[in-house]
Length: 307
Image 1 (cartoon, rainbow, N blue to C red):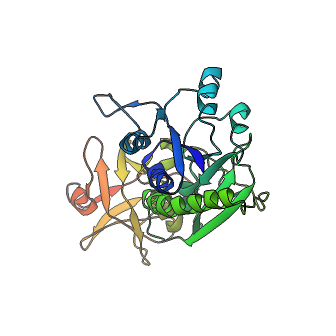
Image 2 (spheres, rainbow, N blue to C red):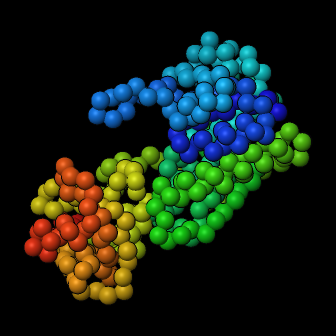
Image 3 (cartoon, rainbow, N blue to C red):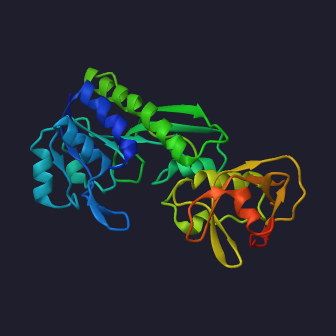
């Protein structure tokens, strides 16, 4: 089947590679090169890099509302457009171009966690499962009819970054299978059913850890915001970035109190203590939390809010 692939970040790459093997990818849509790093070097997206490696034409418009851009896309006469984390709003004029529509791979069990950060919210909320869904894009935000959903038990120690990497690989096969079924005429899409929840883009403010909350909430918030936007707490008004923490059963510290207990750096929460693994004080790289605490005479205090 003739398809256009639309995607931008690294999590889109496994799907592009697999679809290029199983279908005729006639063009790739991706976000335009963006400044990266301290030197703000203009850098193509991971999808563009792979598309060029595969010899597939690349389109990187800043908007899809331009009639000339729409005509350029329509000229490829795609039977479907496969979408994985593309990042631009698709106008109705383009949604109507391929006979099978724009087929999106979404990283949740829709309609749960519609939006930009479904995996992160799944982890932050303590969902027992993570998932992928394939659905046909329509005008609403992640509201289209679903072809299928695949669920996986959530490893309680897995960060959002690790979960996304896993789902990017399994989801590539999920999306390819949906397109195979479309090509064979056997695919069936059904309206979404169940409670609707939303997963808007996370900001740094969302990643502020309040150690007065229960340990499970603290653990899940840190896991769900790792690696981005990155969990943090404050000591004396200064931010300290936090790596994943481990829940333990004992309770010896007050909420926000941080101390060396044996060789472990522990922090108190609203319930049981948690073990800190890595921290990054302001202006410094991540280091073992125990080493950081030794430099503070083995004890400090995260600022907490009343709950």
